Amino acid sequence: MNTRTRISALLMALILFAGVIGAQRGVDSTRPRMDAAELMYLPNQKLLKHFTAGLDTIVADLLWLQCIQYIGYQIQGDRSFKWLQAMIETVVDLDPCFVDAYRYGGMFLAALKADDDAGLQLLHRGIVANPKVWVLPYEASLIYLLNRGTEPNSKIRAAHYVTMSAATGTGPEFVTKLAETLHGQYDLAAVEREMWQQRLQSEDHLLQQVAARKLLEIDLKEMCAYLNESNDRLQAQGQPRAITMEDLFRSGAVDVARMKTWEASSNFPGDPFGGKFFFDVNGKVQNTTILDNLVSQRLTTIQEAVGKYKEQYGAPPSGLDTIVSTKFMTRLPDHPYPGRRWRYDAAAGKVLP
Image (cartoon, rainbow, N blue to C red; front, side, top):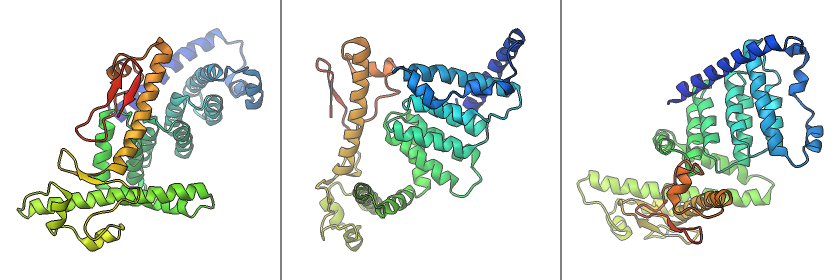
């Protein structure tokens, strides 16, 4: 189901739900009209926190159902949705890990209230609280594509969010393919570099350190891309492709002066983190620092899914496919190193690189 069809189906479900609400209004005709009772849909957040008695997530679920009911009333009524943003924010205040509230809340704010900024702010908040969830940056990309498609740089921003979604390693395969396509069309590396350069000017020393590392990692990615382009030129000129770093540099296809701008040695590219450049099983230049970072991130995500399975069923899954079939993950992320697969110790419930 494509994005437009999915959103249309969701809105149709809301309209049908509103019809049920309309019938209920006839039964509840003695209740105050909606415009006189809207505050019951907007509970005082401080009092709410005080009286939840540690049941924040359960109360958040109940308020989310109340929010859906409110949307149904508004679709039948004046469609003002003036309390919608505050209601959703109350839900995620109680449960910062309530992914559906961020996802559908962002969609509702953008599609029903026509407030793209509020929808994006909510999704940004959700991304910070749930950085390993693929669907939140993906929904942000849809707002830029569907709601802001005519604005300058909207497609670049959409591509940035799709790439962020793919980087979680937990989304469907089509997200990864879409990210690769958009990354080829737009210079997302330049966008990312500018973002981290701005953060490098921060007064926060820790943020400066993170930004400095991220900029060096961008250098490594760009170095890999340049080396692969150099190898492609060899083939285009009728020469055999290099299969080792030594062959590639001896071929003369690599501009050594350009490599030095990345603090490379006069012969081979350098890595400030001690990693190495190598040719993978597909004949592409890769860097171990970049791949090891991805291995660590994806390994943590898979191990967390194994832990959630064990918590629910009392024992580790028999295999990694089980955490997908039981919906603890949308799919098993690919191993960053081409040709490798994740290893799994079922007895210990331990995922190995």
